[in-house]
Amino acid sequence: MLYNATMRKFIETEDGKNWEIIFSEYEKMLEWFHSFMTDSTGERYKVEKSQGERLQEYKAQIKRMRIFLDFIGNPQDNFLSVHIAGTGGKGSTSMMIGKILEGMSARVGVHTSPFLQIPGEKFLINGQMIAPSKFVEVVQKLKISYEKFKKVYPDIDLKYAEIWVAFTYLYFGISNLNWAVIETGMGGRFDPTNILNPELSVITNINFDHVPQLGTTIPEIAWHKAGIIKPGKPIITGEDKEGALRVFREETERNESELYCFGSNFSWKLVSKGKIGAVIDVRAPYNNYEKILIPLLGVFQVENAALAIATVDIIAHKHNLQIDSSIINEQFQEINFPGRMEIIQNNPTVILDGAHNPQKMAALAKSMRELYPDKKYILICGMLGTKDSRSSIVHLLSQAEKVVISKPQVAGKPGMEARDLAKIVRETGYQGEIKICPEISLAITEVLEKADSEAIVLITGSLYMLGEAREYWIRTEDLLLQAEKHK
Image 1: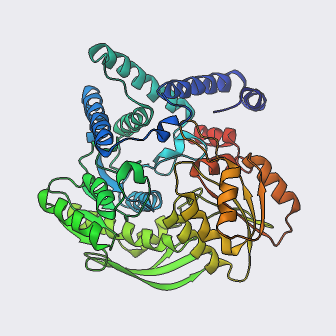
Image 2 (image 1 turned 135 degrees about the vertical axis):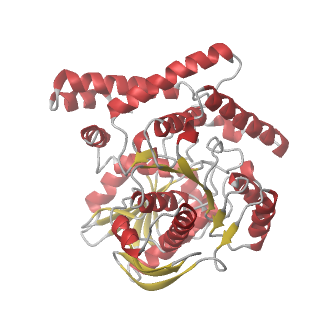
Image 3 (image 1 turned 60 degrees about the horizontal axis):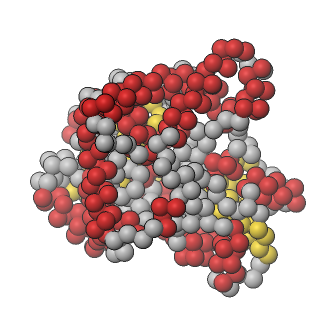
């Protein structure tokens, strides 16, 4: 949300009344979305529910989505799609699949979740965020449709996440796309995105996250993710745990689909790695791809890239499309994924990464050890109250010379109090300095004022908090203006 005082200053230096109208309408449309948020404090996460109660809510959610999308003409059927679920790596894998498809197709949409600074990050077309004026235009269409819908179905109220998915499908559906890559929010089977009939389903991996909602065992969580598998359409996974694979095989058999697995159907080999990324060879189901440069930091991105390449290899085979290593390398050079091992400044080096569960923080810690084996970093961290903070942050502490604890400010989700996270850090046995600074902007300012040019600062935890942090370097207004200029 833009602040009016900042906006007035911004408008006066740009295009006067024209910009004032655009951004005023843009904010009104955002307020309309926020009106669907029934629990702005996130108190619902503190309410204990049985799995039966949750299942009933999930079924009601997917039913609402089906009814509404059918009412507005099922815009999600206007493009071919790839649907992606998994515990980690969904966003990066989605972006890479989208980029490769761009090299093979004219127009490709990519939906990821959540956004860091502005909602337009969630729905890209050929790498471009929606212009604020176009956003207003599409939301007005959606508003009119929803008002008509409520007259026919007065007892059905869409929720916040659901209306955003509806917007995405409407926007993509009227944009003459060839393909769309759609990332799930949470789970898969009952996720609001799961109204698609994708050409291919992708499950990155299975681990423990959203445990109260998805289950306490790997098979339980895998069951939710496997819900994106569709009749007669192939599924590919990077998972290798037998408990999850058994669930995938059962779901695949029920749907008479074809399952492609890491190891047996595709694999990758590291050729080299350095400070700018890694080079790999990929053995995909139908072809091999050599010397692929992945210009993203983080050991986990190699796995995501191999899965993305294998995914598009299947698509190319089944849809008679041309793909080779040169196309992949060319497209990968355009990848820019904010908040994932993102070096936002140098001297001192500041890295932003949205690791928010044990699996992701373990991968982040491994990446930091490989990139900076002989250096410690200043850790700035804040987490949501719904996450397993203790099992997560412990991975990063051995290389941290100082820990600064902040608190995410997120509408609809409870941020963990900074003092509570600081207590957890100390209970892990961490002996270094711990400082509490609940406001992330103040935490960054204080750290950078004292850090020397050789220091490394790692900001991580909640993806939502990274949006606040990123504002220190990149203004929301500048992102919106850039999107409008590329209209």
